[in-house]
Length: 433
Ligand code: NAP
Ligand code: HSE
Image (cartoon, rainbow, N blue to C red; front, side, top):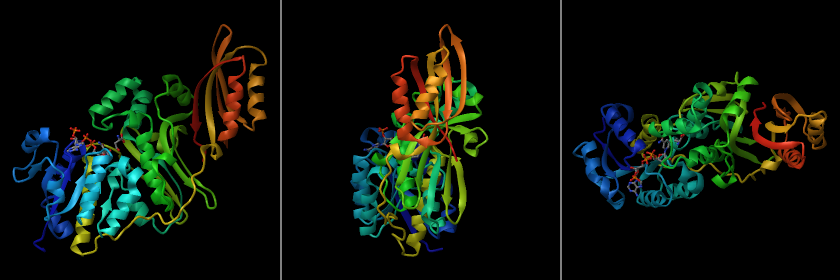
């Protein structure tokens, strides 16, 4: 054994920070065998008003500090873990650590999805590691596989369920008939949801993860603003029930695609997927990511996408990776992998199949008029059901073939002008292979 002790500074002692502390404690006696050195947390940054509580929760020889500079300026600390979340303060802390020659691990997708390049550049300039495995799909290894194990591929698609909160909500609504509000409250209680769950339910959290995965998969920077986003707040029990009846399950999916010679397609939205598809059985807070590469073909990663210990598993795995690098004096081995500059494809130019639920007059000729509008706009219909006719009104549900988004939108705009149509109640994309 080297006799070396690697010292770690922890910034944030919330859900993930507490998990990191516990996992580091559990693994303490294993570190000398796994990395060739001892490793321990020596300082933890919390807010001034949380210091007493934090001291009571951690080993007495750990220093609980109220200023980030106590960690940045500590020459004994080699690795810093940032798990406070947020953008400005976290970015300031991470840059200060990197500029002080410390390697950094973060779970902060908000930050990486917007400022990833700047942080990776700072790490490279200082010869440090900047790792962020936990920022995408919690416990699931996906960043490291994309950057290392699958590096020999041209990746054409990365697609999956990357938000635990929304997957938990949709699972409970579909399988247990819970209301959206009940399921969200439970997801928050279990520590899956962000401090402000708007980012989860409006699809932004998933969008950040898809931006990060897209950047790495296609070697070209994708940022949050590039991602087309729709959340799950408009989904109703009726949509879930129709989907089930038609053999589908509704999931919030993140999709990043790139075909040779084309732009990068990157989007997050609810999608009907066939109930026989492997992603349809990914339930509760579990996440799953499919990757297609020209050499590897299909690979799927599955596991817990959120929560205290699962997320800490990924964070501490990164810390151990850095520690191993340090033991061989080879910090900063894997840099920013975005060496291309591929344009982002507009959503209008993407193709999809669509589920559309609408309320229309129940009269002869209505169906012909509706299908006529679709036909005039190059949208062909694959499935149709009509029910719930009450008085003069009926609910109609259609699924289209795989069509261009701009054609589908033109058809919907034309439908909205028709007096026979009372309301378009839902539009949801449908998976087509
Ligand atoms: P959290 O429970 O809110 O914990 C964050 C902690 O950091 C809180 O105790 C917070 O204190 C503290 N903090 C915030 N700003 C601080 C500052 N300026 N100085 C000192 N302490 C500060 O959040 P979390 O769920 O652990 O998430 C942490 C990070 O991990 C986020 O970037 C999140 O996106 C990411 N992540 C979370 C999960 C998950 O399952 N929870 C999974 C993957 C990634 P206050 O409460 O007083 O603000
Ligand atoms: N709020 C996130 C989720 C945590 O529900 O997946 C993991 O990033």
